[in-house]
Length: 102
Image (tube, rainbow, N blue to C red; front, top):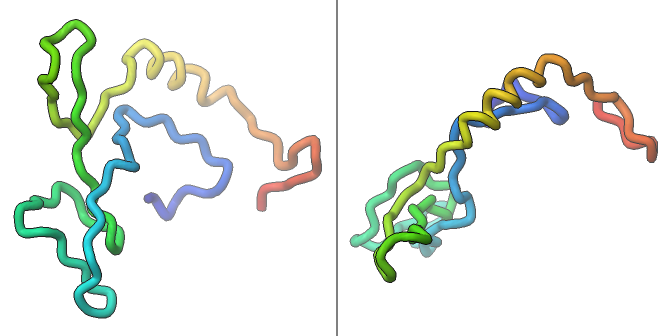
């Protein structure tokens, strides 16, 4: 999260994560969430949600052998194209349906 960004700002990431892969911890006291002792958090939690890695298997790799990862790099060629055109894109303040950004 970046407080300097607003609705409608265009962000071009150099990497991304599977944001729905989480461990959900029980609330042990008001607003206190304790993950199991075996879990080693890799990023700060969001309330009861603790981001976790995802297991990936290579299509051409050995079966049933997963690699745990959190971050996935973007395609460098697509990133270069996005960075080239980002300065040329001008977003309209309102949609054709009359929904406007503030």
